Image 1 (cartoon, rainbow, N blue to C red):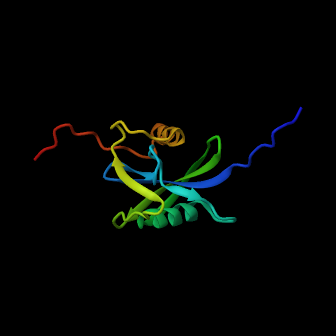
Image 2: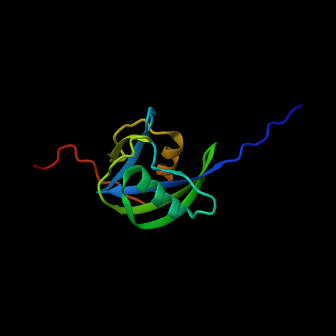
Image 3: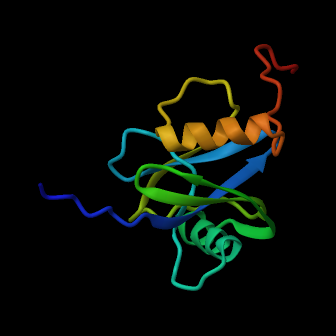
Length: 139
């Protein structure tokens, strides 16, 4: 019997960015589902450094503070989840990211399973709070 060699998981810095009670989601070019910003960590790079670098590369948002929250294991990646406070205006790296949304936490969106699980943990542990949805915003 031939055993399959276990595939080494990729270390990924995953950024949580809130703005007015809404969470930043990105969609890679050609992808159908939304995810959290972030990407691969360089050898020896700290998770918060990688999260800040990846966010800047993908969106041009600059982190003003960063907090490491936890790690999450998906089938193919080891996510190092960081909460980032940012400044600036989103300008997408179009070669990589096709679109972005500030998500209210309630509107139905097609989000990749690992991001859904990370978001659920973040909500459960009280790391972030979503703004209450306003069906009839005041004028």
